[in-house]
Amino acid sequence: MSRIAAVLEKEFADLRENPGVFLPAVLTGLASLAVPFFVAILVPAMTGEPLSESSDFEIAVEMYRSEPAAAGLSAEGAIQAWIFQQFLVMLIFTPVAASMSVAAFSVVGEKQARTLEPLLATPITTVELLAAKVLGAAIPAVVLGTAIFATYVIGVAILGEPGAWHVLLRPRSLAVMFVLSPLASLASLQLAVCVSSRVNDPRSAQQIGVLILLPIAGLLGAQLLGSLELTTEVSLSIAAGLTVLNVALMWLGVRIFDRESILLRWK
Amino acid sequence: MAFVANVLSAHHLTRRFGDRVAVDDVSFDLAAGEIFALLGPNGSGKTTTLRMLAGLIAPSSGSVSMDGQTLGPESATRLRREIGFLTESPGLWDRLSVRRNLSVYARLYGLPQPGKAVDEALGLFDLASRADDRAAHLSKGLKQRVALARALLHDPRIVLLDEPTAGLDPESARDVRELVLRLRHRRRVVLLSTHNLDEVERVADRVAVLRSRLVALDTPAALRARLFEPRVRIVLSEAAQRFAGALQATGAGDVRFDGAEISVRLDGALTTGALVRHLVQAGAEIESVVQEQPSLEAVYLKLLHEDGSPS
Image (cartoon, rainbow over all chains, first blue to last red; front, side, top):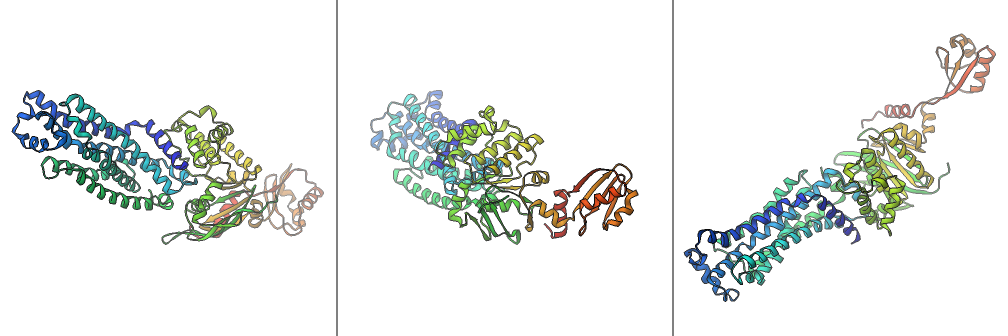
């Protein structure tokens, strides 16, 4: 464990010296925050037409009012809660983007600087090195994702209708943020790590990692079109799939992070 | 020099990459307090040999043993604890300070007092004033010095140095050589892979010439004696050609004249003393007598030429 901690210390020190690596994730986070507030609060305020008077949201009000968490909300509050709930999936983009950036930067950066060989000449095992690389990308990603979620909840509490923010603390919302989001981040960073062993440019690794974003965008679309509701059960089913994917990527990662492969095949 | 038991041994080390044999049946032993130089052209398998000795890559066949115990994949971690490996490139984390670069390694080696070990290394390598500088801001020589400090941080018994003075200015190269000599005094095993024959000449106890397989392995003096016959160079105060007859009488087989200089091959029973005596008796005024010593470069090139196999 002390060797993992030593490499983690290095990873975090390196990130502190290069905060620019978080820029794509922060921009993604800001965009993820802006879109739902734009739809649920800014547009009605600018047009002077409350959401509850729009026929587009009648069904949403009916659906949402039937749920206990929305029972005490005003019509406007219920629609806002529905919108904020639907867009919650977008917040997953932030930790996914962060973990991809950090992992790609970390592994490709080490390759470019030729810092891996002296590291591998120490008693560290390759599993320890892989674990440190994964944790070094996952921890900042989860922290950033949690910060974005906290900002989202606080923003809804301040700018939204009274009580609308309560729906963001229901189990189904928390399952999205604290089960789906870390698993998706882990999958994207493991994918980035695997790809990083074969490329010499962090952007190439990030582009492959974007593959994880596509199904998340699909989830958002399916929700907004009404063809899927991300209930706790659905979230857990997707989480099960992501777990299998993560185990497969971990298996692949351990093989790629073999000492000989790193020294002889990572070009 | 009397060496004690072997610390590290290579037994018939062979490493193939596909159809290419990078290292072919290489064996040698390294003893405490010995500086061993590995010479060879580019692509001759020096780095691959070092990597196998450091437990970084496995041999296709053959083995490495430490203190007489054969090492396998399961004991590679133990081997790496005992080894300090200076890789071809310094491989420092550029954004981190010198101190941070070293402290991460101190923790990776599980040193009981990492901070103290880092401070000592900074002092020993004269890096204390640059401890808080980013590695990216250091000169090439300083980076190499930090890399050396890192390789020796845990006071390893075995030190593997891959091209330690490549690209360094003469002063930095001298510092590295002095450090290597200090390691000998501390009874460390030092294996040096280099193209710098002058450096080898100055520090190495034994030399191995590698061209995938071992072309030669011996002390520099023994290699010279094996490849070149002894010659003596005598400088006179006048034209040397005048004494050709006197030299013929000594039975010298190969005599070369160059102005006031004579170079004579010492064949059979002919000694330097007998040669000087004959010349003095013939009326020559001798200014100096020097045993000719072919450079290690000449030895190395002759070995490769005689070997003739493609690298």
